[in-house]
Structure formats: C-alpha cells, structure tokens
Length: 522
Image (cartoon, rainbow, N blue to C red):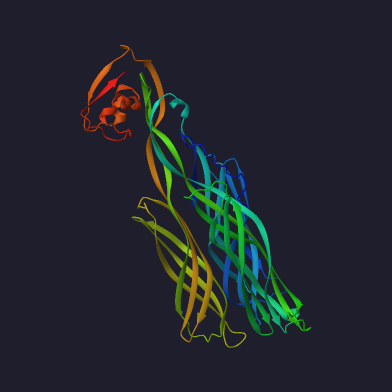
C-alpha cells in the first residue's frame, strides 16, 4: 500500500516564533470483519482432517478524500488439511477488505497499519469452508494547527519558552521485484513434483540514516511445501532486502519505524541442467515476489512560544490560553527472541513440515521510565508421523512479557505498540516440542503537556507623564527581571543597561532579589 499519497511537506521554519505547527493524531484498534464461504473445486479432494489454518492481509490502496481515509486490502485464508485419500492439501482463497474512517478534523496526510487480529474457520461440509477474520486498523494522521499569530508580537516585549511537538512523516518506496531460486533438486524432474503450498514474508530489522533519508535492510523468508511421490519436502530460503527511501529533513532525534510487505508471490518449478553440466536434469524451484517497503519518521519539532508579552510604554490587555500538545519521549524498535516448550503428546512424530505464528491480546503498561509489553504468542504446527498418511496438528500458546526503558516515561504517558512474529524455528525430541521465535516490537511513547501561552495582545493608550522619570525599585523575594520590566512596561534589556553595576542577570527568568535595589529610568 503506497504511503506517498498527499505526501506531507515539512515547514522547516514554521516554529521559530510560533505560527503553525504539525502533529500526529491517531485512531487505534478500529475493528472490522471479513468473511468468505469457499467450496472446494472439483480437482481437490474432500476434507477428512483439518490440520491448521491462518489468514494474512495484504494492503492494496489508500485513498484520502476530504476527511475520509479509505483503506483497501485483501485477506488471504489458507487451510491445510488431509483429504479422503490422506493426501496433504492446502486450500487458499481470498476476501476483499475495505474500511473507511471519517475523521472529525482536517488533515494533511494519513498512514495506516492493518493486521489480522483473529481468524476462525468452520467446516460447513466435506467440501465447504466457512472462514471469518477480524481486522484491526491503526490510522495515523498529520494535522496542522495555529500556535500564535506572530504578527502581534512584532513590536512587543516577549517572554518565550521552547516546546517540542511530536509529528510524523510517512514515506513509501517503490515496489521491487525479486526472483530467487529456492533450491535445485537433483535427479528429480519438474513433472514429478506437486506444489502443496508456498509463501513469503518480509521484515526490516535495520535502518541506517543517510543525508537524504534512510536505507532499510532486512530479509524475506520464502518457503514451499512439495510432494515428491509419498514424501513431503519443505524448502526454505532467506532473501536479503535493501531499499533506500528519501525522507527529506534529517535530525538526531528522529525515530524510524520501517515496514515491508510482500504484495505478490508465485512459485515456478522447471527442469534445469545441473551446475556441472553433465547433462543430468534437476528440478529448479524459483520463487518470484514483489516487496514494498516504507518507513514512518517520528520526530519532535521545536517551537518558541510566547508565554507573556507587553508593549513598552503602553497600556495593554493580554489573553492567555492553555495550549495542549504531545511530545515524543522515545521509541522502541527491537527484535526479541522467545523460546517455547510443550509436551510432544502421544503421536509418533517423524517431522514438522509447516508452521506459523500469531500474536494476540497485545497490551502495554507505562511506569516510571519503563514500559511493559505483554501478549500471547501462538504457534501452530503440522507434523507428520511414521506413515506417509499420518499428519497431526499441534498448537503451542504462551504469554509473553517484555520491558523496555524510556527516559521521562510515567503512568500518564501514551503508548502505541505493535508486535509482529518472525523467524519461527521448531524442533522436537522424544518428549517435547521446542520452538524458537523472534518477535519485532515497535512502540512509541508520548507525553501530553500543556503550556499557558499568549493568545491575543491588544494595545491601549500610550502612557502619559514627564518626559524622563526615574524610579528606585526595592526588589522582593519573588521578583524576576521579566516581572519588574512588565510592571513598569520597559524593556528588560534597558533595565540591565541602566543597572550595569548591579550585576543583574541577563536571563529574565532568574530571581533578582539578591540585588537590594535597582534604578528604572523611563
């Protein structure tokens, strides 16, 4: 799914003296459902035993119109089963998914992540499958707002403070094609091989900033299940992925959240001459896939906002307002290794030939400088017994808890998190089944803050009096250079200049009560 639509342009000098700002808003966990009833075609055998099933979502398009964010995707259901002749078979079918979210505000750009949250498959008959999937969608938008009208401060004395507002940029790369030979099977002809299933999944595990953007580095894990006679073969290969994406502005406080999506995959089995050119034939198994990469750049944009103001030598009225905003505290983008163990059961296992993993019930709790992420990791396996017709389903589920440090985090912080499983490696011995699985954890922490700023500044009549007026001011404990300057409506710089021998601080925030008295000339 392309994220280049309505690409956000960063206003690099929007915040030096207030003005406009851009921030990220999000709507997380929007649920939708899709379902499909699938009748097996005539060339497929009846379903005798259901071994495992799964569903995955491929995003297709994103459309932004007015305040609507429309997302299109394809949910692919895969059901692995034994037919009436005890032959391992996979039924694969798809269902279109569409979701439109109407936002209550205008936005500049939007991005989204869609994932299958749960899947259920029911056999409605020996040749009919009823499948349903729940899809969760997280929508991210970039909005624009006004901090202050900088023009009203052109001739005013101002007191400023710096704030950091979290924003984001959504950048997508081009779709890249890959063609890789998964394996070459000697002494086997292509027409002796039956393809049961094949698939590929892509992940990005490294991001390297460049002068103009980032380079993404990762891999695609491709695999296929083949039948040669009565034997079931699983072939696997890891294919490297490299992609450069321009993100424009670069800074040291950027946090990058990458992603890679396999948008299409096909498998071809052909006869090929072996590498030694002996004339003997071998079967070449080649996978073709298309992969689209993208990255979200999170950053804090720094702004100077006016918290107080007055006009020198004039009566003026000031209106203050509370300005709420979110500051990015930090980000997590890491891979964690999970080890799982389960009893093997009574079945006589000869090998595990298919597996996948899913994550459910993702939760996050924020504490003092630490976040705790919990979820349920579920791994489904299909194993074969001593006889060719013996196949067994296996399921291992285990709660996972991980902790990460983020400075400034507290219980009121807002956290968005995603957990994606990858790199599943099962094995077994005489008593137990062992699974090693890596999960990619991405989390973003924000703090909601509020600053009291000047909203309007109106000038009144010019003060009248003698042309030159001298005041002796005896400082009080809470006095600052700014408070005294505002009281007499005179520039803080002038007070400092008039009292050079009094060692007044140049920082108007500093307390000046250590100076017994100061002279103010108006």
